[in-house]
Image (cartoon, rainbow, N blue to C red; front, side, top):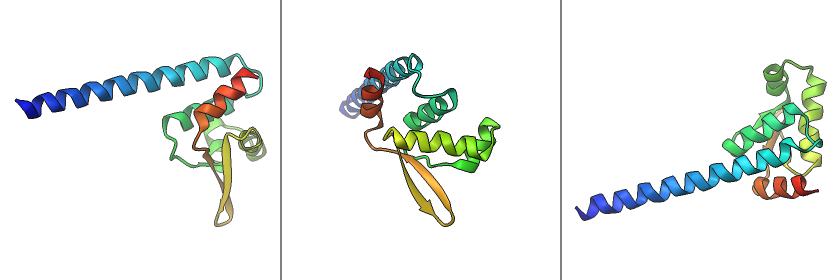
Length: 113
């Protein structure tokens, strides 16, 4: 019985954590949707990064996904890097963009300005 109670508490804690995290993401997205700093493609990229921070983003993949030119996708990702939301690194011959570790905090600051 004790082990079941421990498992129930752990599940309850997980539910609380997920509720807090999803509420935080919703608040950030609402704040950003009112902002004219990011275009709709960049907002999608940021949303994906909040959902899976370990996922890398490439220019070619974003161009295919959003059905835009390579240059438009490149501009979107470089813009996110300029805002300090993503970092850029080179893997082989291509650039890979990853969200910064404190993405949520930086998004809050960006939304406030």
